[in-house]
Image 1 (cartoon, rainbow, N blue to C red):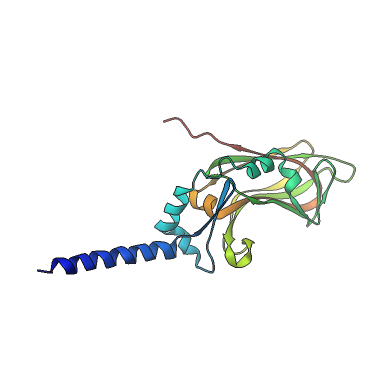
Image 2: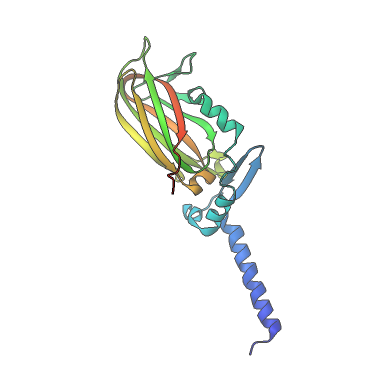
Length: 212
């Protein structure tokens, strides 16, 4: 029979190994003001599918629910989009021509859940109807890049491609999973395919969970 002291040593070693594994597999947590972010640095993507990643994400699952930064973004989302070739006017609407892009807002953190994004379009002297591609993405944090990664940690949550007429309102429902919300920032993208469209509004609403 193994001596009691040896049993204690084995149990302690197993606990230390489990603790070390949890520490190595769990993401780094950055908490500031009313927001929390998590990140991995130079590790394979499968780290995010481990139990430590899920447990850490669950602990901070609702931390960003009352974020004042997210509230400011949601109030006027188009005003915080970044233009890549497109042009923003005084009303925060964006003229998007062929091959032009708008995306953002930067570092937009919201809790996991079910949402619907509404993209509204109008017209001006330069833009009216055209084809566009819309996306809702999540971009996971990467320490090595100093911000949201656009590579292997990027996921498309919802997409639409087609012709847009003035007055159209495109609905993109999507589900933001627990780990994606913890590690990533949500990003809205609109890419011009042909002619020119005027993106005048983006709204984000949470879909209530069904009653049980």
